Length: 275
Length: 241
Image 1 (cartoon, chains in turn orange, cyan):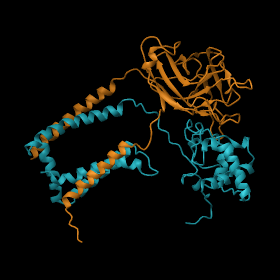
Image 2 (cartoon, each protein chain N blue to C red):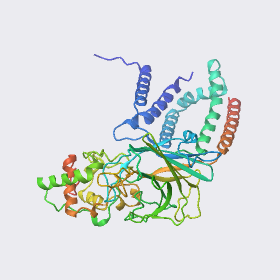
Image 3 (cartoon, chains in turn purple, cyan):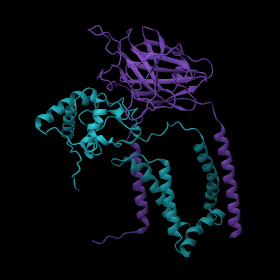
Image 4 (cartoon, rainbow over the protein chains, first blue to last red):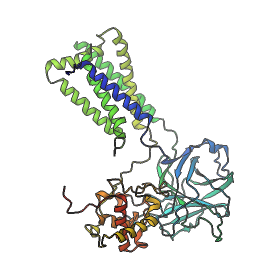
């Protein structure tokens, strides 16, 4: 049977069909969103560096990252307590504070957590700055907290087995355990004098950050469940301390609007004269 | 008036919607960067203009409605639309300017080469271990104890995988071991993530350096077990299309 096609309608049918498909695609996103960076907002007044439960933390943006067992180094573990960690950041232009929040069924003296950063512009392997075969890697700066110590430690490493405290201890840390959840706040000056050992934060610039968590629950052997390189870890993610407000983009936008308006007026006037 | 413009406008909109929403959902595809979408739309527009100006008559038919619209000669309801367009254009330019000058919340783009070239000494090596059922089974056993926590049931979804970025390789994916030679896998397993060149971002991968824990023979057996378990065959030099 011969089909009669009406040329004027096929475009519209196709367009409606395509829009319908697009709407369906929007309803069912093909890929999920997850955090890739921690944002430390610039705040006025004092930072809650000693109080992980302070109301100010409720205003900080939350990022959540999955955690995995440390498997890279041979002294490994294949299952860990902390499956993910929530991270918040704040800074006041001088000091930066970063809070980790994660679940742990029990409070133990050996419970611990750490942040890791690259130092300078040289890339470093996320596992303690492990040496790489074809790339000259840099050191890492580790901010470490253990419950029984009740303070933060400022450490450096360039590969497993090289971890050692810095001569200068610039990092503070405070942990609070409530209802099966650890909240640990690390804080330090955005910039220090020890640029070869400490990570330096430039507001507005992205830095690499990684996380580690140890469940210090005492096992029947007398040893903690997670210790040393047997820990929950993340690979590198990003951290950024917000830069002070910059209003210049608004001025550039206004200038662009004025220029576009002027262009329009001239164009229309010319066209009218021509016609 | 302006009927001749309807088709080009619909075509441009449809191409935009296709690139923005359909392409990312196609198998083995990914979202297109906005700069690439913009480039495709510019090519589309250029093609439309070239097509519309092939002859003097088609040129007048194409540009006539545009000129009448801009000069306000159309009258009627188009007059309101004209003011709307004239008002929106500067605002669009301003918005684009703001977007390109304001600082982005997106981290730096990373261009990782997934399968960088191996060092010369690993090119073209052949598996010296006989491909017997016993050796394959032995390799699968090693895989289960050493590799499966991250690589899972050969699908990259082991219980230890979620925290790693980049994620562990999915060996069932036809774009991984099926397109690689056994010698490539031997290098990657033996030297691990830290053996990658700079374009492979060796500082992000958790792949262990298995030469510290497994003999070369065991690594070759693991490779056999991997291909067998994933239902894939290694790429070979004498493979002919």
